[in-house]
Image (cartoon, rainbow, N blue to C red; front, side, top):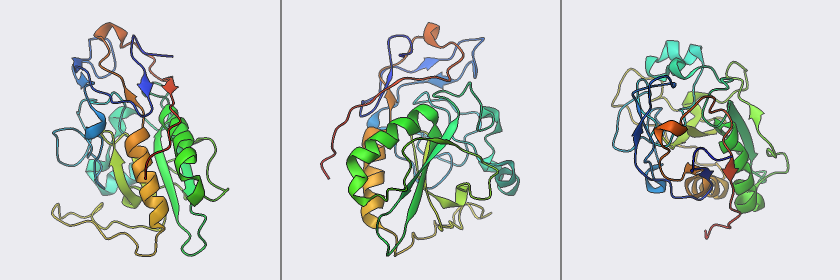
Length: 248
């Protein structure tokens, strides 16, 4: 299914003109659209990956790629207020652009070291990325890696945590996390604190492959939707997936 005359496409370029979300729709008055493939990279900070915007958190922001930012637990937000994404609903919010938040697990097939990554995003995005990652990174992946998305249970003891984030993308609507990583800067009161280094024994081959594949394949909306196209619910977003092998 496309939205208006546009659809979210894996490997697509994005772009188009930004619009203002009309009255009567979620987040009326905020901007939406216009983000391009070259603008999707953030860093390890929640609130990164917004073109032309720096700083912590996602409160009150527009939607340069249409997709809503991921949300973390209330416990995390109590410890660090900028992690509060409650205005976007909980993880099972069906009005979320692309569907409820889901996760996929990608496990290294190298026994030394054994490295486990997670990708969090909306249902349509995670579904598409599983296909792209399988096409590009299967030679680094354990057979125990995800073949389909699972709901992101933010309150589970085993759920990925914000301090495990190693890269945000697409206006913080996609995040790659690493089990065992603990970024001290995430919950620090010192805004100038640098990120903790990544583990030296992680599987760098898989890490690079995941990062490159997400960067090149994460679905983007092709051009801007017209304001008349923005009608709830936005929970189901079709993804046109291209099965291209990246030139690593």
